[in-house]
Length: 204
Image 1 (cartoon, rainbow, N blue to C red):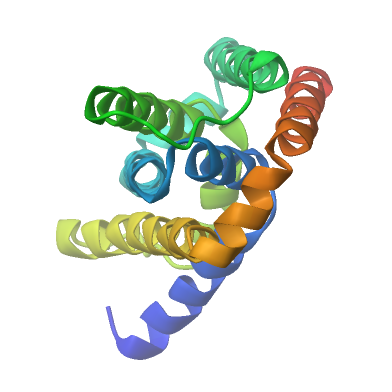
Image 2: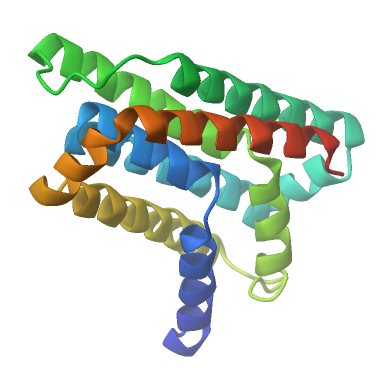
């Protein structure tokens, strides 16, 4: 794949990653609640989930999912359930504890990792996005190396963007201000995620 072919792909992947949505809300919340490490872990695992979707789509296996209503709806319902669960957790969460122990930090990082990965995998809109995107960049005679480059580009850009979000938000002055309003933000994040879960259920 030439640079002239790769750069438009990378730009579209970046714009897709930067678009506001449940992924941004989840990365931000884990960063605020548990710190930089949890936010970065969430970003990395979310990026890996995006890589998995991208690899499925470039290999052609993802197209099979999109043509099977039962399979696609299953993913859609799982995604809605996960968003609803995360939204309820945010709404019911208590005050932010900034004095996490090492064990608490490890547990928070693990939860953030699973949340990022499962959120990416259970979002059917990711598959639709890549189906539309890759139709412009995948050639029928594309080699395995080209397919891996495309999938890795999507996953790496997604990971890099959310790491930037987590690290920027973790700046001491920013984090202190955000944590001072953590209770309100948790309610906002919870309401947003629950609303998104309902939107996923009614979308076709």
